[in-house]
Image (cartoon, rainbow, N blue to C red; front, side, top):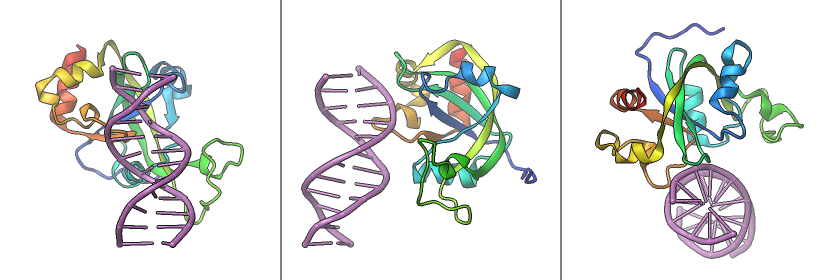
Length: 161
DNA sequence: GCCAACGTTGGC
DNA sequence: GCCAACGTTGGC
C-alpha cells in the first residue's frame, strides 16, 4: 500500500448509473467499499491517477436517474492504481491496447459514507446561485469524474440536510 | 426516443 | 494537422 501523501482533502463528484452501480450497491458491498472501474476517458483517467487520494470526499451522483441527483457521499480509501478490468478479456472494459507495463487506465477505491435522506436533484443544483459554476450544472458536462470546490461541497451538503 | 455536446478515429 | 464521420454520454 502506497503511503498516504498529506495534503488537504479534495472534493470530487463521481457519476454512476444507478442501474449499474448505485449508492445502495456501494453500501451493501463488502466493507462498504468498491473499486471505481471502467473509466475510459483520458481527462478522468488523469484525475484518478494523479490527483484523487485517500481521504478525499466524493459526491455520489446518479446519472440517468429520473431525476438525476446527488445520492450521497463516499470517501476515497485508495489512490490511483491500474484498473484491473482493462486486462480482463471477459470484461466490457477490456482494452487490448493496454499492457501491465504501461497501463492505460486507472481506478481508485471508494467507501460508502452517507446516503442522503433527501437527495439533491440536478435541477436543485442548477437553481442554486452558489453552484452556478459547478461543473455538473454546465451544459454538456460529460466528465464522469469531476473536481468540486470546497464551497460547492459545503453547499451541496447543506442542501441535503 | 431525441438530440446536443463532446471525444475519438481515420482519411487526406 | 485538419476535419468529417462516428460513437457515447446523459439530460430532457
